[in-house]
Amino acid sequence: MIDGFFAALPKLAIGVIVFIAFWIIAKIVRNVVSKASFGDGNESLATVFSRMIYWVILIVGLFIALTVVLPSLTPGQLIGGLGIGGLAIGFAFQDIFSNLLAGILILVRQPFKVGDEIESGDYRGRVEEIETRATFIRTFDNKRVIIPNKQIYSDPLKVWTAYDLRRSEYEIGIGYGDDIRTAKKVILDAVKGTEGVSTEREPDVLVADLAASWITIKARWWHESKRGTETRLRSQVIENVAYALTEAGIDMPFETQVHLFHDQTEASDGDRSRQREGWPSVADNPKPAKIADALGRSAND
Image (tube, rainbow, N blue to C red; front, side):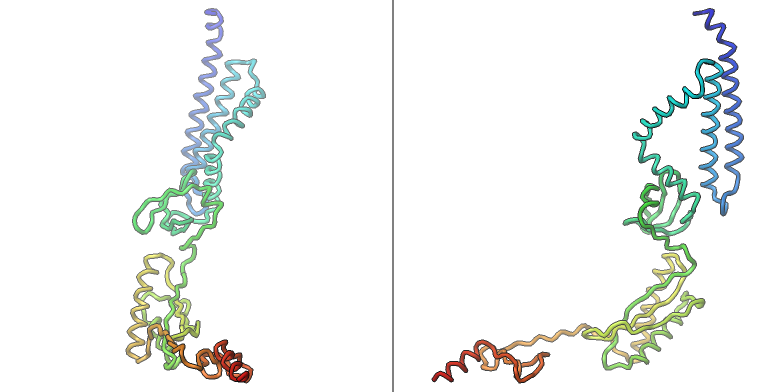
């Protein structure tokens, strides 16, 4: 055994040297790739690729070193053994590999970037970091949420800052006694006069509904996509519209409800020809059961 050990020392030394050489090459390649520019200067993608290349080169070096130390161990045997082991590992780490693959696809395709505001499921916030396993976002109430990349890639995702401009809207009710065209002009002027409303795309005002107690008018305007701009501008637009309508003498009515109380002892109770409340008055209106019975008794008498 001692003679065999000393006989194998040259092969062992060569194997170690080969592995160290591949390790040095892997580090050099990793540093070069990590400094490369992918897409729009995506640093996260460069980091992922550098780590993947590093481990691939290191594994290849390990295989070659093993075949040097053990000449009877062929690459085919190594690959076959890794195939069986890889299958078991794949089942054990299925979710991890799914998140890893989703993270790589997100970094390659770039549906969003660091700094974008996204909404995934019940969470909305600003992207702080994109890793191969998960995406880190900071919510607007200053909480960190870690979302698995598999969920982000497979479920519907809203990217609120994908475009420079985004539209907001708000509904205002005016009285039926007010002039619609005048109210629309007052609202439009108030929206246009609000600082921060985009001039690239004109705001507009539309009649949206004829409600029970008011006429609904919808104001729509464009602004920067960030949520901070949206929240501040929405408040300012509503405030300016309210002041403008008040100064113009246009009513913003409260909801009105009408309650009708009937004296059910009256002979006419339920007679649709005398108590209509929206019922059509026609000759063949059905008589209420109380009146019909009374008429029947009179005829018999």
